[in-house]
Image (cartoon, rainbow, N blue to C red):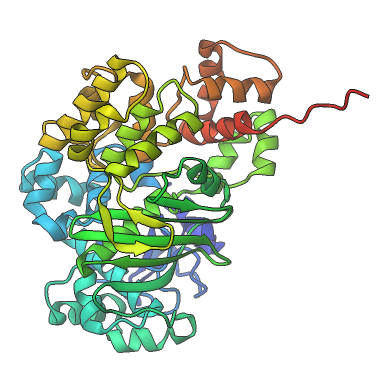
Length: 491
């Protein structure tokens, strides 16, 4: 978007652009979300920034009226696969808090100086400033939506000291932590608290419309003892950098209502970030649906299911194993196989009703999955070899990869073909423009949509019109293929 497109968005107070950029006003030295109800500033006084961190660096503070941090994030980090986008995915996942800027740079294959220059040029702020903004956003969410103690919030948000927490909140929001909490008393969740394990409830913002089909997608693939899902709920146990975690999510009236529990406070922002990615909360559904609607038959699907989402991943290694097990078999058969493997998962310290174990680690799979896997010996051997490579570190995949890098890492491995690589890119990276050309369900869905069976090349050609949102078109076709047909009565 150019300056005038963004200016028209703030002049019309268009909520679709909240989280995609911020508006800094020179006369007041504040920055706002695009939909801020305040009077539209004169163009000469406006500077647009792609991130709140860039506005902080330029000396602006957040608007107290619209709270620009309380919005979904930008969808750019999934749409783009450049260094800046990959860095932002890692920063959101807490990489700077765990390993500092040197660790972030090493994951991306750059020196700290090179990375700082790239991010400053692309996003207007360096990695430390971007991580600081991420901490401030987490702190705001916990201050306004929980009753956790200030010290717990400070360390849960990634700050190294109470003083650093207080100074950052005051500088960014021009309010002390207590003032920020007091202004938001009407929306707090009273059940939050800290104990041996930190447990709290809050609402994660999203852009509407939001299609609930993602819950059904997760439900039919849920692994016994690890996950549970219903029509509009999903819960599971997860392994986090500092320990274990649990969450339960429900489609709410305002956003995604989540209850979470973590062993280590430092893991709280990591878990919240991964929940956002799993449920694709930062997607721009109107932008996606506007492209998909250009095909008249797909437009009818959009009318029935607006705002479809792309399921993400809680653990990249887990998704790779699940994808390999699900190759060339039905979803039901793959889930049956995964349920057998679930007995290799370690019992959880956060034992919840119906949930009692973590998904097996690659090391556990490499050691014990051989006797549990069914099917061709060659396929079993491939899964075990990949599990061994993940366990010993010779293979690593994560949100810092691009689709091309995933292909370079995975395609040389036996038993992994283009379908698996593309599926992993969809789930792990949130890649928006993936087409699974040889996928039987995609072909069946396209045949149902068009009323005529087509060959993979024909379907691929037709789906090109949906770029850069072909992954979302794939979700529509999968859903259509899974829909049960009702036979007409014989008499």
